[in-house]
Amino acid sequence: MPQYYEDKEEDGRACAGIREDFKACLLQHDCVVKEGKMPSQCLKEGHCRALQTTFFECKRSMLDTRSRFRGRKGY
Image (cartoon, rainbow, N blue to C red; front, side, top):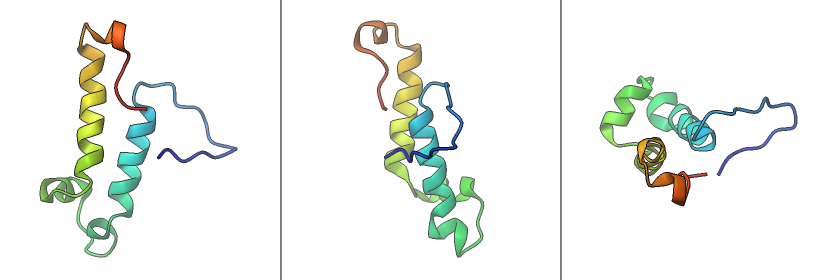
């Protein structure tokens, strides 16, 4: 779920909520924090896979011409 803060600037980009959650998941995962690996290495190992898939679907729906009727996927 997206985290809401009072003093946070609004991100007007598409898929901003998913992007923020995906970034937070990677940076707070034990793979990065305890093992000291790069987030890209943790992605290759399969961490935060559900958010990665959701982010991909949201970005792909931006290019889909049918999305003008259905709206973008994600939140």
